[in-house]
Length: 211
Image 1 (tube, rainbow, N blue to C red):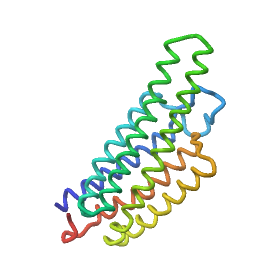
Image 2 (cartoon, rainbow, N blue to C red):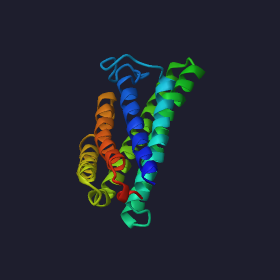
Image 3 (cartoon, one colour):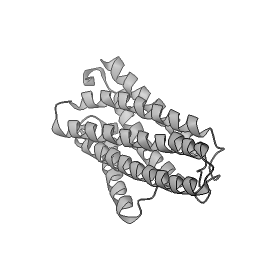
Image 4 (cartoon, rainbow, N blue to C red):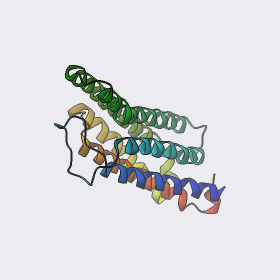
């Protein structure tokens, strides 16, 4: 069981690291008024968003190991898992909109009115799904904080970061709510801190601490 626990932690680390790389190479928007060209060189729009969905799936698998270790029958553990999975689903939806739906719309018509109206509608949908997904993931991380706190020093770090994520997400939602490229990168980096510290509780687990 300890080997599996560590494998879950390694999977979380790998998915988190790759997600950070993808965000740094996130392509520019179809709407050039949005932030673009200020990070690393753009990669293929479809590849970035498809790979990001893959990262979310890998994180879900790895974090399922964390859920089991925290005690899958506990209320906060179950609530946190539901919030995290729902948040990942919303973020995957946002990636589908930006990575594929918008491009299909632009390729299907040359009518500037349709392209403008459709682009705005898809942008609003992407922003809504991203905001919802980010909020749900942050609340899920916070819900796991009591369980993580009991595990180890790394767990206590993850617990504090989970509460901080929820607070930051609530603050951002009530004061701005927008997710331009730089804000999305910052949100990914903040989640990465929680994700990596959570992975550390799995990788560094002593044999007697296995699930």
